[in-house]
Image (cartoon, rainbow, N blue to C red; front, side):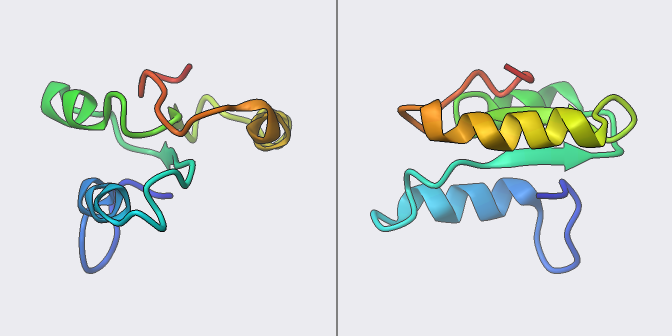
Length: 82
């Protein structure tokens, strides 16, 4: 998901997903062109699998990441790209 969305931020979307039992374990990858502020990094930490910058993530990287999702036991990652 892009960090900046038209009607709400990705932080709000993730918060809403985590609050609902039916979507709490949905894995989330944030892909953005933005540099994250320290506050945003802290807010996403543990809530998303990874935060990738578009400039740093190529198509192959994304395909590899998506393929690895089946091996991830939980949605909660470090939020720092790993």
